[in-house]
Amino acid sequence: MTQPVDWVALDAAAVDIMRRAYAPYSRFKVGVAGLVDDGRIVVGCNVENAAYGVGLCAECGMVSQLHATGGGRLVAVSCVDQHGQPLMPCGRCRQLLWENGRPGTLIRTPEGILPMSEILPQAFGPDDLVERAEDRSFHG
Image (cartoon, rainbow, N blue to C red):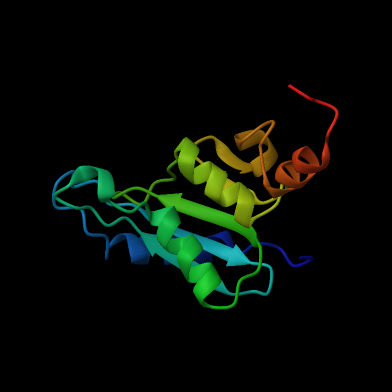
């Protein structure tokens, strides 16, 4: 993508969807917005559940919307907390972002805008599955 990222629009979309989060237990609302390589913006918010382990992360919702609306690759992502401040995605969500973006996908973090390659160094992705499946040098 050659055009610059409109971080103001991306942040606004993340804040807007954060307000729709369902977080009655933690009261910690999260919203996320991602810019797709075709120019779309996809969003997600966290959805808690009384059975805590089955709650949904905002990033999961965003990735689901990404695929439900045509797929593509994430170019930039803004994740915010209930105050509209940048929030670093957890490790599980970083893996989701890696798989649905690329090493250069930009993430707004509390420390500034960083590429995925710095947020998830030495990442494991789909290419590793193919390469390792074809590597027959280990006969353990």
